[in-house]
Length: 248
Image (cartoon, rainbow, N blue to C red):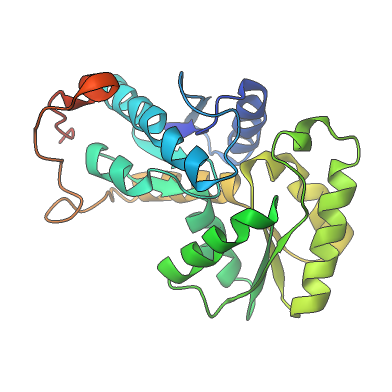
């Protein structure tokens, strides 16, 4: 089984961390590869960043289809391009926010999300609503740490851990969801410090994709997620206009 993990930002050091975390949970016989697009933002911290990350994500999904990949993970907590990726992929595609929230909802009555910047909290609430988990999501908390600082700030782990403690206390939640793929390697440490379940979406999404492929399940293609109709695209997007037929 081949799973492709797409980090929608172009910071390759973060992609390497994401790949290591995904491989840690993958089962025997599952090959995990993480990639960064060749175009897009260095980090995703705004609607603008997210919108401009999507073409690169879709190019990686299309390349995976040509290579025979079985399933995909979108490794950014905004789940950018998830619906479009499901249209062009034959196998299952899972976003890390989607996976983490569903996993956390199984661990107690409610969960808290700890993310990076305050400006991204609205997007997290929107996703909780979309995934039918608004009732389970008891709070969204920002540690005000830019995404790239997760790799460079020597106090990053301490800052995120303290934010998780505060989230548990203020929300009365049973679990914490880490709201950034760049936090994936902090999960085990924070869980040990908190004494409470901490969910990393990279690991959760990797296992969800692996399970769906094992079960022979994929995105339904009868309606909304059918292959997009062929039509011309102009300018820089012209290469995206080629016919995309999902593999049987």
